[in-house]
Each structure stands twice: as C-alpha cells, then as structure tokens.
Length: 589
Image (cartoon, rainbow, N blue to C red; front, side):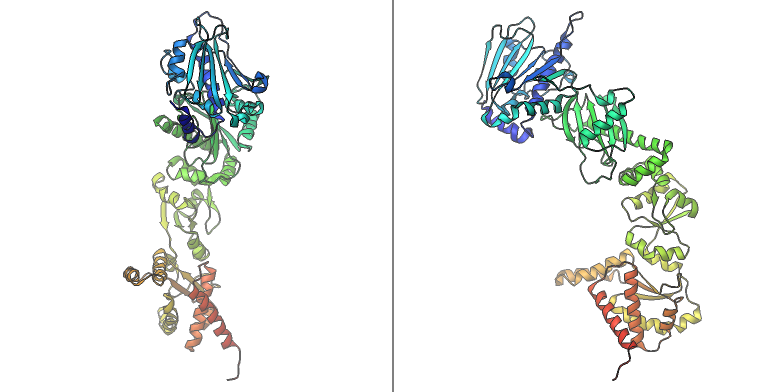
C-alpha cells in the first residue's frame, strides 16, 4: 500500500492537526500497560506503569522515542497488528474486553506518519524474543528479531522526523502536548526529566480545598471564575465530572465547547452537543469510560448512549436549579438575571422549570415588574401582548383604564404564559391586541355623539387616504389627545399595500385579492374627547383647519406609540405643521 495516500487522507480528512501523534503514542502505551495488568496472574509482582518520552535533544540522534512498560508483542502479533491498516490489538485477540482500552480503530500508529518518514517499533512480550518492526511512509516495512536490544517487557517506538515536521518533536512542544493529552492518565508520563501527569481527576479529589481546586481548574481550562459548580455523574456511561456555570450571559446561538476525557485521555477541548441546547449557560469537564469516540478521537460518536447521557446531564442541571430555588432564592435570582434565556428555553418544554420561572422570574407589566405568580395573585386574569411595540402602544393607557397587561414580547415569554393553564388548571390568560383596548374606552353620550358626527366625518375624510379609521371615545389619561392602534391583521394589510406599490402588475393583482379580504382590518386613530384640545377641535367649523388639526394629532399619536413612520406619514407631519403654523400667523393677503 502507498501510505502517502493514506497519510494525506488522515491529515486532511481525519485528524485536525499533526499534534495528535503524541496522543496516539500515549494511547497505545497506556493500552499496553492496561493489557499487561489485565493479564497478570495473582501473586505476580505489581505491573510497572510508566511511559517515558525522549525528545531529540535527549536521544541525541534527532529521533523521538516513546517507551512503555506494557505487554509487548510477539513476532506473530507484530505481523498481525502492525502490518495491517484497521487491525487493532485491542479488539478481542488477547481475550480482553474492548471497553478497557483507549484505542479501537487500528490506525493510531499511522498518525505518526504525519510527522515522521520512518517508524521503528522495538517490542518484547513475556517469554518472547525482542522484535524490531520498521515501517516507511511509502508502504514498505520489515520485521526481524532484534537480539537483546530490549531486555525488559514492553515497547519502544522511535520516530525519524520528516524534514518539514521537526517543530512537532522539539522538547517544548512535546511537553505541552503530553501535558494536554495525558495529565490525567492513571500512569506516570515523563518527557525527558519532566513529569507531566498530575494528581488525577480534579473532581474526584477530596479535602477542604476541593472547591478551590475546581475553581482554579475552571480558570485554567475555560478562563473564567464559575458562578457555581454542579456535580455530574452518569453511571451507565461511566461518566463523572463537573459543570461550571458561566458568570456572564452567554450567546444562545453560539456552540458551547466542553472538555471531554475518555478513560482519562483528553478527547476534545471543545466538544459540542454534550449538553442539551438550552444549557448554554454551562461548560463541563468530564471523564467517561463507555462513550464511543469517532475514528479521529476528536469528538463523541452520536449514538443512543450519548443521547441518553445528554438527557441525564440536562436533568442534573435542572435539579441544581430546583435545589437553588429551595435553598437559596437570592442566589437563584442572581442566576436568572444572568441566564434567564436558558431557563426559559427549558421551561417551554418542562413543567417543573415553568413553575420555577412563574415563581421567580419578574416580567415587565404596566403596573411594574413582577413575577407571573404575583401578577396572578393580584389580578387573576393574565392579559398579555405578544410584541414589545404593542405593549408600548397600550401599556400606559391600559393601566389608566385599570387594565393590567404583561409584556410578553420578549423571547419565550408568550409561550410560557400560554403553557400556564397546563400546569395550573385554574389559570386564566387572555391575549390582548391594541384594537381590543377600544372596548375598554367610554362611548360618548348619545346626544353628544350625534352632535359630533359632522366632525368625525370631516376627520375621516382627512384620514381616508392613509387607510386609517377615526374613532371618537373618552378615556384616561385626559392629557393624551389621541392614540393610534393597529392589530396584526391591520399591519399585515398595510404591508400588502406597501408591497403592491413595488411589484409588477401580475403580483399586484394577487396582492389586491388578498387585500380585499382585509378591508375591515384598518388601523384606528382614537381621539380622546376628555382632552380639552380635542373638544375644541371637534367644535371647529373650518373644515381645512379640522383637517390640519387631525393630521397633526395623527402624527403625534404615531410618535408617542413608537410606530415606524412611512414616507407618507413624514410628509403629512411636515405639511400639517406648516399648515397650522400658516393658520396661526397673521398675514397680508
């Protein structure tokens, strides 16, 4: 086989970087030590567990050597495992359980060809002679007995570097990579005279300083001091670890990266899809023994076990939130101020989280910020708007009419309110649109309404070209002369009319047909008869002055209601202002 093609495949499509060669060498060494331990007979001396890496500055001949105290290979096994791509000694050939080992795919040694032109494997099994295997990047290999070149049981792998890969084998780089991948391994790993393995899994350490160590670990790994630390454990996946809660808001759209170890060997520094999507407020570090890696060993294989593990981790984060609500409400409030989006996203599907949000998360209302539980206790019926602009239009006026309204225009809020009756059968909710507000306004007395009909007709003629209906009502506060109210169907009809002006005749006919079905859905300009200015305008006899006044009130209502101004609206504001100014200033004619 031409290994150059295989190496090109590995480097461009399987492995993200040549640095993985250190991980694969460590993996093979640890698996060899594990195999020797498993095969040990009761009463034998303890199996040594040490991996020694010697960079070129130690070997003195430009090569890198990795030696282990593992089980070693016989000559037959060398032919069987080192000369066949995809054949791994960790399958069932030694009679060992496959899940005891880190490697599974039989391609780990090939990763060394990313940095080496030649690989030498000097290995000796118990009661067997030493064997030397030499492999070259062009596919050639040889196997020969090596006499007494290795006296101890185990294996030494020597890499002869490629000319363009020397930087990957220098001492500093090898120390960094060995520390990154192997600092938590259960065997001693040395690079030259540097011990790179630590005290073990940080979350399994005991003592009074355990939390401080975990905080320091989070700072080293993720670069932040956690808001809190959540213990993680999924026995069926052989998983233990911790989740660090972010102290600042996280972007829900960003893919969270987690540090994942498999059998204490680093799998990925930024693994995705480990936690449910709603849990974007946490970063976790864990070690798992039963989850499967991909062939590149840089991600987790998506299978049923990973799916159930993801759900279990989500349940544990949810349980932490519930406990926080029970034991430390003040702390929960601080957490919600930072990460309410994640909790609300979970509450859309989870009843327990919905109860937590209802009780603890304050929402904006026209009577002040309060939780849904407090709002229901005070007002009973939960009226809500589904858009922030709608709430801005009617919030203050609705409050003046004694009509409390919740602003559910923010992410997930409307969905949460609509789910309330599912967990509280007695909960009453009502969706409010701006046009519904007119039903809470007072109609004029019959005699007064009849007297004001000519004024309403003149005002309607002024507003017809803008597609707006004029309504005369009495409402509080009296200082507000007019309101512009538009519901969703009216907004849709206005968008149809605006779009019709920009398309060709064929599409214009289609939009005309749609628009005719919405002729009654027009925005309303509600004039407040309690306002002194509106009453004086309604008594004017000059139709031109009435038109200018109504157009001015229309423009003010648009601005106060935070409505977008169309070009026609801007032109109307300008012309009505100049017209009223012209009427007010005396002139010679």
